[in-house]
Image (tube, rainbow, N blue to C red; front, side, top):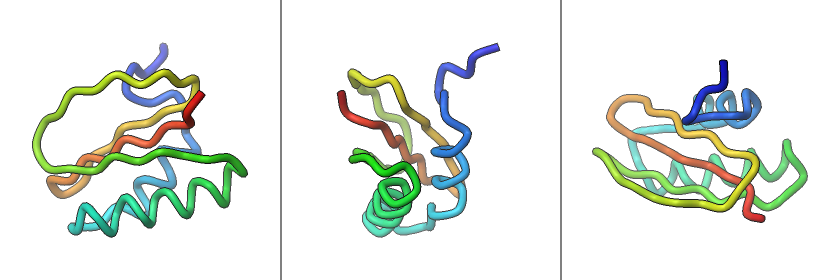
Length: 76
């Protein structure tokens, strides 16, 4: 079964490792780690609460921890 919020276990792992209470710092940490591990550009959005978005991508993951939600994806 496909997870509609995450199609990359690598990105899920990176987000889970790098997400912290500070949304600005989380997005920078996640972007740096993801670009290093994946060898490609990655966009990252982090925030509190709910948000809605559309992204044209084939590699993505959204994960939450301690009230912070981050979405990372490879731009097409």
